[in-house]
Image (cartoon, rainbow, N blue to C red):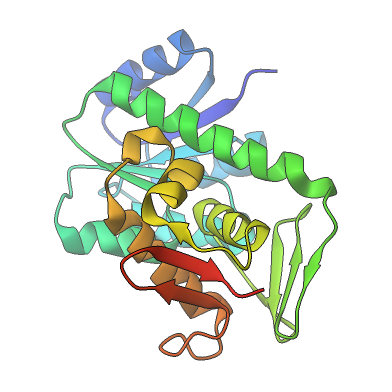
Length: 228
């Protein structure tokens, strides 16, 4: 079955070009011209991934992202002309999985779409594993649900994949390069900023005291480890 990608953008030319590239890459492409229509299409068609613009009429991309994260962990790639670092950080803080600034090369966007869908599918396929439990954290691999001290927390697809990787290798230090390769894919090799940023977000969600982490530990100059 073709994977469905929903493109939410108010630029008709961009929608047409992106739809063509997605179809040529083997995906089923869905489009929406504003945030409200985009959410309606999410409810109706349950896409596998969303490409999301920020500056749109009726409902902007930030509000769409918040609504999506309230109901699901669908992978989200922001595609926007807003290229300020504060915009990128805001996107990751809201739970997006990738951020691409316009203008860009469509082949690169297709690679990012494929990599994110592959990571998400891999995480779902491992759902038959025995659920994880320690004194603070419970993880249901099949449903992608995480609880900290009995309270459910919501993770983005990338945050969950990072947690999956760290827990699966608990007790071992994983380097920045290993985490980039396992979680983000080869196209992100050498960009340690992604790892540091998501480690920070993950600590805020799973640690009782993010500034003094109990489980997600730093090995200075090397990488990170989930305490066994």
